[in-house]
Amino acid sequence: MKNNEVTILGAGLIGSLLAIYLKRQGLDISVYDKRPDTRKTKYFEGGRSINMALSYRGWKSLEKVGLKDQVLPLAIPMYGRKIHDEHGGTTFIPYGKADQAIYSISRGKFNQLLVEEAERLGANMHFEHLCQQVDFRSGQITFESPEGEKKLEPQVIFGADGAYSALRMSMIRQIRFNYKQEYISHGYKELTIPATADGEFAMDPNALHIWPRGKFMLIALPNPDKSFTCTLFLPFEGTKVCFDKIQDERDLESIFRNYFDDAYHLMPDLKQEFFRNPTSALINIECYPWVQGNSLLIGDASHAMVPFYGQGMNCGFEDCFILNELIEKYGDSAWNLVFEKFQKKRKPDTDAICQLAMENFIEMRDSVADPKFLLRKKIEAKLYDLYPKEWIPLYTMVTFSDMSYSEAYAQGKLQEAIMDKVMADPLITENWNKLDYEDIINQMETAKAV
Ligand SMILES: NC(=O)C1=CN([C@@H]2O[C@H](COP(=O)(O)OP(=O)(O)OC[C@H]3O[C@@H](n4cnc5c(N)ncnc54)[C@H](OP(=O)(O)O)[C@@H]3O)[C@@H](O)[C@H]2O)C=CC1
Ligand SMILES: Nc1ccccc1C(=O)C[C@H](N)C(=O)O
Image (cartoon, rainbow, N blue to C red; front, side, top):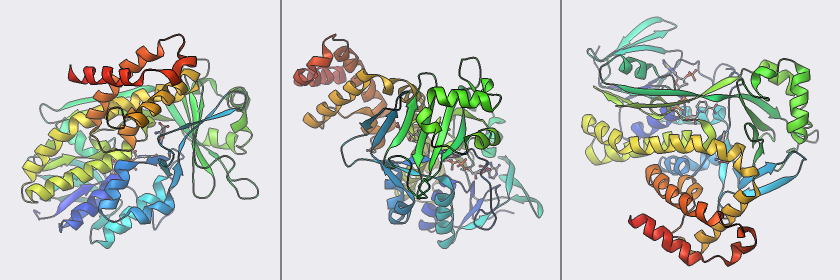
């Protein structure tokens, strides 16, 4: 049956925030998710969750709908990376200026908060509804639900149903839909560092901990219950240290004692968790167009990225913010125009952040262990101090600003080329304080003008 409803597929972080934005526009919203309602049933996430890092774009999108203060208690500020070397030593590398942080947050409670707010504003939430397909000719969606098969014909459909989107699958069957997916060679495993016996954090809670080991790494992000969610990233196969080579507890112990000894002593449940939790894959998805008839893909459904920049959620939230601005500008009866403007504006930006996320893996697992990387960061921080308009470090543009991702990417590449030249000086370690900073800025201005 045709109706005036707007239907959102997926009640994940993006689907729920989108429902909040659209309810505030006064629209009639129904959200359908294949999962059970996690507020009513104990739902096991499957031991495959990675903590997210909320940053400027995410906070800005939450603030716009009045949610920042409610979310803050769920989040822990991390002011920089704490690098753990193989001998148990640590180095701190700040993310930005002293008061700039990214915020560790886990998906469960945060998602519930967004679902509750959407419902409070009047969105109709339907759980255990698996979207099977969308027929673009009739505009009909088919769901499988506990009451059996259901068919709906909403006015507008948003696919916020994640990396394995059913809406996108239906679009793929249409003509001229470009689609690219890539599984990277590494997978991940969720592990835990629990609170200590006296109920404290086992490590500094205000940092993102990294054990960079070249081709692989372990990371840990803090939780409000004083535990850390750790994620081990290893190649699936083919290297000395890979998931394939960890067949039993002895293999596991030997790898942890060799490479992550300080963490090993903080992980009493390592063996159970390692063999119980699944090894999950990491995928990058780019596709276009995002619009088909009355339907639009948004969030991971249109641009699933690897997690290494901590931008997947922030980018999806920014999608909602930008879409909302377009609705405010063109009205909620001009969906075709809004969707067209949205995909044209957003696609270069999501391509840029997908690429940056891939590149940040190499930085996290390898570069951060190199003393020259630290020096490079120091020089860039000084340039930023001296010339705050002319030189903004890439990490700052992506994480602490809302400059478009594509602009940040382009500017970042110019800066990278100039810094490569600066760092090539064999005497750089002794010279760095006496560098001709003005000349570096002039090089940047020339590069921008070309
Ligand atoms: N920390 C983590 O472990 C995770 C983090 N994220 C973060 O969230 C960000 C945004 O994710 P978002 O775009 O909201 O996607 P999500 O994957 O978080 O949410 C999509 C929602 O739609 C559900 N769904 C999937 N297929 C269907 C279907 N056919 N019918 C109905 N519902 C369906 C999913 O259930 P189901 O999940 O059961 O498939 C999920 O609840 C990501 O970029 C990432 O940063 C996302 C996933 C995991
Ligand atoms: N949340 C994550 C999950 C997995 C991997 C990385 C992150 C990060 O946030 C990385 C951070 N932005 C960094 O650059 O140090």
